[in-house]
Amino acid sequence: MNDITLIVLSAGESTRFIKKSENTKKQWVWLYSKKEKSNLPLWRYVTSRIKSMYQFKHTIITSSPNELKFMQKFIQHNETIVLGGKSRNHSILNALKYVSTKYVLVTDMARACVPKKMIKRIIKSKKSADCIVPILNISDTVIYNNNTIDRNKVKIIQTPQLSKTKILINALQKAIKKNIDFTDDSSAIKANNGLIKYIKGSEKARKITYINDLKFLKQNGCLKPPTNITFNGSGIDIHSFEKNKPAILGGIKIKSDYGFKAHSDGDVLIHSIIDAILGAIGAGDIGDFFPDTDSQYKNINSTILLKNIIDFSSKIGFKLINIDTLIICEIPKITPYKSKIISSLSKILSIPSYKINIKATTSEKMGFIGRKEGIMVKSIATLKYKNLFL
Image (tube, rainbow, N blue to C red; front, side):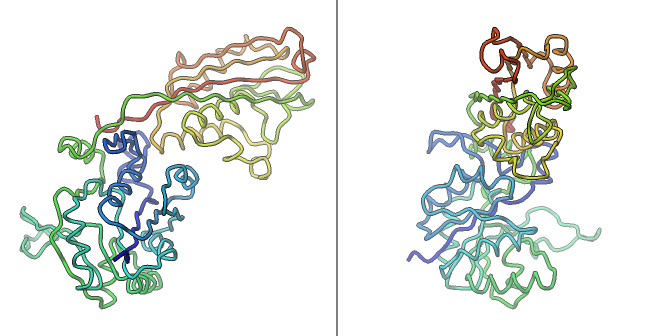
């Protein structure tokens, strides 16, 4: 009976993981899917894997605000992405607004290798309690507050967990009113006097919390690193000249009688690099991130925008390899500033200077550039997936 909705929680900030992962969130650990013969981010891989184990009526995935639009590119049939909340409880409630089924299966996308047998055990028990919870026994000695306790009374709770939808909604709403942030569904339901059934979990359903967990799952044959491919993106930006405005290129002030007309500071070089990076990772263009209709970007220093894009690309699992740019103008003269611009970009992009190339030419006095009305910059960026399984 098609009476279960799947919720995949993928809105967290991965604070424990990101410290050791070159600034990449675990949702965006890229890996190779043998079934799909493609590289996928972890959240997509986990979602597709669990969906293949049961015919869910609907699948709902939570996302952080900065990543929602990019995640939309990976959405498949009968899936919905919703904004996560400020806590796990809020994120689940946001997803539950779209649930119409009697039951809901909630999983953390960090459980990458949940076996099909475990999913079957959970679903088979759905009518026996308000919440079905997989657990593991403890095999080592356990100490609590410096005292040894009976390990037979200690269990490890896992996800996915299957709950009756209305009971889970009620439990989470009460938890939020009391300002209690439960770390799993069963705790909220149990605190609301719900009936919990504990069933056998699986060692294979290990949660990815730290980067070493990836190495463990790789060694056990569950996950495979992404293939070593690169992505190229191009960017082009054009600005007319404007009197009484500073001329800024690559974050460096250029001696000129004219600046570059724009909503921001007009750094045409950085704008083209931003578009090149976004093109390589398939994330739209500069206007999608920093619309010129938004007053907060009025006269903004474009180095701030570039840092934002570098941070975004890093968090979703990409590493910048190199940048190649071509500046086309009659004025100002670029050559005297090349080394300063390269040094500036190297710091912003966090790549060595030798991986940044700047070329400058004129239009041989043809067109608007030849008439000294404006400037154009073309950029190419090369990026690759980060391999965090090393």
